[in-house]
Length: 216
Image 1 (tube, rainbow, N blue to C red):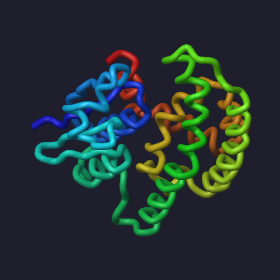
Image 2 (image 1 turned 90 degrees about the vertical axis):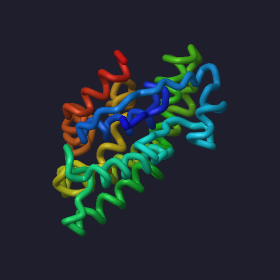
Image 3 (image 1 turned 60 degrees about the vertical axis):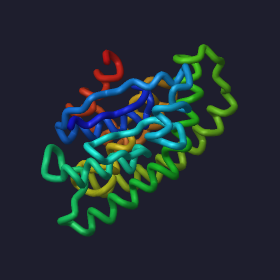
């Protein structure tokens, strides 16, 4: 049975999953969920994710939700296919990858998501006005996060070590959106962060993911 991904194509969580599938060179069927009509809060989708949030994934008789859990499932289940996204043969790198996956989820994503909402989603999807006070507050928080990233990336090419991994991949959807906004300068001002962004944003699997959400 084909892998099925349920979601809305511009969702950062959905794009995180699609990027992992593309890195693994896995074919999948995308099943659109009309979030504007509230389909994510209704059956049949609610049976896939009881929290009513995209994405959900079906792989045979396995159903998963929560994008980072899905990417880990993909990385381990299809470990020998496509790009290695976890490195179990190197305990030091595997440990670092786990740490930086948590950093992305608990430090980068909350700040980046607020900036993405104010600078991208409110304007692009809802025609709403950006709250610049919220932007200023979260830019200051992002500066603190990126200073830590700069120190880390001065030590290794990628967050988990010398190889691309889920720790880097999980950042891609938000980075892609933020690079089109005024906060791009915060990344550009930090040479190691800037080099890392440029590297991962031109990966063929990510470019394929961008084409997916832009053109379907």
